[in-house]
Image (cartoon, rainbow, N blue to C red; front, side):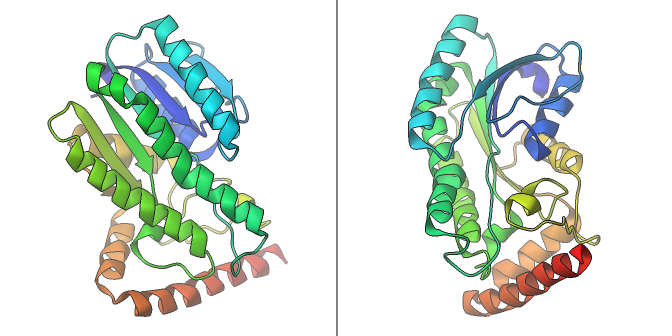
Length: 268
């Protein structure tokens, strides 16, 4: 499947799942050209890696506008022949009652988790239609129920999930595939960014970034519109989808509170 692509544009490729996307795809298809949009340059030790890093903070709307212009210039200069893949991977969450840690952080989350994927997809869509391509949006299992204790984060991922599925239907038959990826807890920097000083990934549902990436590429190759990575996460997502929303919110609040407490105990 990857052999049909020439270029991969990824946000947040400096660490975690985004970095694993670059590493895994480069090993499978060494001639791919990667354009990474993030604050830091990825530290990837692959001698044949073709990587262009565009420094940016997608929480800053002016920087996102600038990046769209630079991205267009890069693509016009390289003139890639073949399909283009856009991986909207950047995102973060916060733990605690709204609006902790502060309102500015909450509003920035809206820009990173929702506005940036919409803006980048809209900007690249004419080229994707022309050359063929795919959009992979990193949502979360948090998208399947209200997440009290992470209220804004869960809502942004619910938006990304539903927007991806609707966009995929609109683009059916256009040569542009849209895939929503919903990982569960993954061993990345997410926990520290969210305000926890200790990473807690439940063993029974926790995954590595590599596992999430492999599930994503398999789903894309199979032409799927949605993948929940890990069979245990699939079961939990299915149950969450069937439970009345008010009850799901109450259960999620208790789970997240216990989860945060486990991080505190582990830290001490």
